[in-house]
Image 1 (cartoon, rainbow, N blue to C red):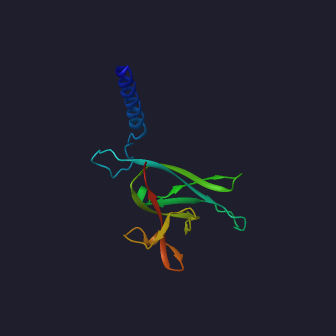
Image 2: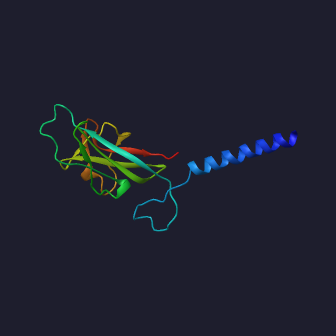
Image 3: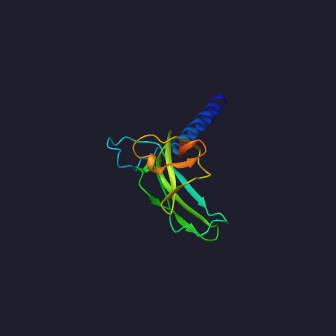
Length: 146
């Protein structure tokens, strides 16, 4: 009887261990600056920028650029039923804070879904800043993986 209980408990431990290992498998970052081929934890972030009802004319382009992609502009797609521009970016390096900007028709715009604002820092950020009451700022993305 005791052997049966011990075998049952050991079987449960092995099942839980396999489940945990499968859910935390790291992904390899797709960033070109990763030259040492080490594995990094990455995640997918969906950026959404809604068009407000009072906004005229309708934007022709909306792009996102940030520290997660070397400040390269990536165009968002427009969904007319929801009046929202969106994109899903994969393999964003996790466990760090990224800085980014939403560009509407080439001009920096506020993202109400950002995790915070911070003063521009570094050579690339001043050209992407937005004007706020507290001075120029760029948006923050807290990139955390589970």
